[in-house]
Image (cartoon, rainbow, N blue to C red; front, side, top):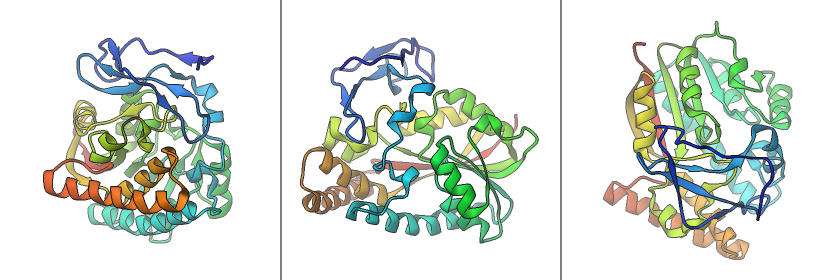
Length: 302
């Protein structure tokens, strides 16, 4: 399927080398059913969606009840499982941040409907958010009375945050290097940076191949490996503290992937849980990453 108004990248977003086209296209199973291509950099191996929609043409790929982080729907069993997992995740995210930074100001980039910021606010943190989607942003402001702006560039340059988080956001940003420079500028000295991204080197990614739900084209511009994120952190002045596995993600991603394969909903939930659990076991015993990886770093010296 041909697309209008697509942006063609002539060089790798990380190293600047010329990319090489991969063989098979990836379908947007979630919303549009359109096909998009992934390319690998011939020099560093970084994988990214190319061509991709311009920023002005992205809205139609997000505005759907099926995009749950923006809509907050609870209609299907899958939606309800997502909300259960999110409630568990809120506590885990809070405990992770509290262990590294027990107080201060937090900026959540891609805050969605604001549940995580509300959770932190109720535990003594000062919070702000960035959320491009108008509907999600309005929900966050109306429901929790928190400050949320549409873009990272609109966060005042005078702000200093002790913590900045990007929970499954970095893969959506169009300019990786500009984003890391901005994050560095907004963080206070030794400030904490938390990044969670899908990891294409996970076992379930290789199992589901082009139907792996975490490709999520064209919303995901970048498709990371551990080495890609580590490179970006190092080159932009951050000191990596640790990389952690995200065990719950494999279950949810595998359930979605099974649905993309045409598996009936009850079977997709059961089979997805089994495949996701196996992927986690492979990770635990081989050192391979889980469906998503979590990077915790601190701002170093400029």
